[in-house]
Length: 111
Image 1 (spheres, rainbow, N blue to C red):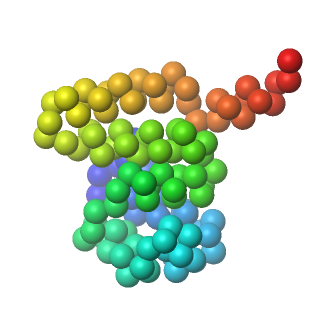
Image 2 (cartoon, helix red, strand yellow):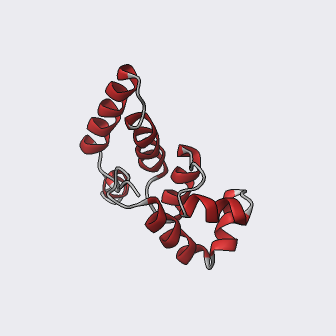
């Protein structure tokens, strides 16, 4: 399975999010998915869109803005369309400029 932008495989992302949720069945419920669909995603038999991956990243504690941008970058990166590949590069550059947790650090330093 291909690594995601965060260098996790989809299988690992699902497993870690399931651990946080309490079980894979509970994770599927949180995501609004049929548990069998989540199993197929984990096995690579079903596509897992950016919205679902973004939700799993948020469950793991990532900043939601970072989580969803990373997931969109992953989808665009896999495209055959060169404009979409360029957009993926732009998302990755923004993610590098604002790494996960930047809001937490900024908000924790009151002015």
